[in-house]
Image 1 (cartoon, protein in one colour):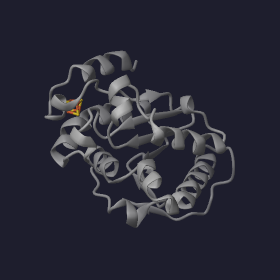
Image 2: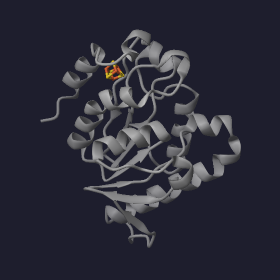
Image 3: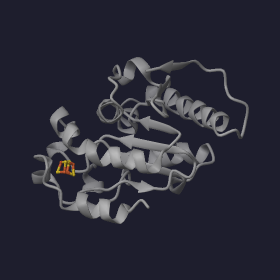
Image 4: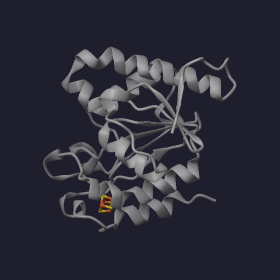
Length: 201
Ligand code: SF4
């Protein structure tokens, strides 16, 4: 049986990389993936670091609004991050830090077994790639594309923080989630399988 309480306890005292020095609270993954979707972000932001919960700031609010537009609540998806501790000044985590932290994401993916993984942004793509043994191109080149890697469909997406900085990409962000949910309905047999191209890794 999966014991996420133990996982969270382990993460909360982890000192395996330098991000340990800059955090107030390590932030564990959250949710159930009962829908079949796991979403991976980059790192806790200021609010998340203070409260120890994932995606509760402005990015989280944007994500929640897009999910609820598609009929999904936060509790139906599992939300995690590439790294669990906030980098200093909110800069992107280093590859070495993502590698160190990827053991926790690996445990979550292998325990939850989501049908679809949505890595949001390049740090999340790097982390998911490390866990699945595949090197993804940058998110600007592949957002919305569908990859089959091992047992999982991976559909990369922009990070909501990037959308808040550049609202011109909001429609692409929304469309990617619409087609991700539609693809999910197909792979779970709730609707006909969409004929979108699936890239084999
Ligand atoms: S970012 Fe991950 S590996 Fe680094 S200290 Fe935090 S929990 Fe440990």
